[in-house]
Image (cartoon, rainbow, N blue to C red; front, top):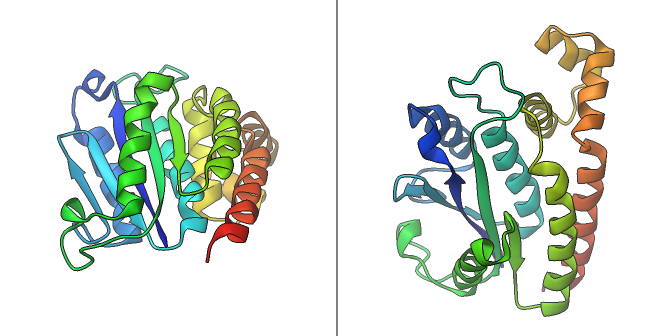
Length: 214
């Protein structure tokens, strides 16, 4: 089984230059695999990403969210970034493995597409769909609560989440040196981003999903 993340950028046209979000996302996705094999960007501001280990899907969704929310565009003095992202996670199987990602089918792709269609209707920026309805119901409620925090990340909060996710072995003093900040400031940013709580959510997601995977 695998996971498929489908997403689009909210308010992408508010950026004067589309490369301001496109380059960071392409750079992030390229760390995870090759374009057309593992990921693609289509219709200008939409994307799809395949994750072979569904246990890692939520952490990657967090990373995408943090990357997008840390973009400032030309609004450098504003606390909140001008763009956000909607994402659906589908868990299941895939077919047409040796074709470009945009032509693949299977339950993971169907689930991701169906959940994505519900995002606007539910006014929710992250949802999951699998073969297990009870799991979906419970995790989606957790997502809904977590989004109250994530949708309101400041640029600084999103940046610190991205750094923390990408460099899990770095100590706060090392991150402080990287950002040229006091360690106390870095600690405060992690707290305001609710980083530990998000990692707890990721752990719950992993534990519950692991019991269901074949």
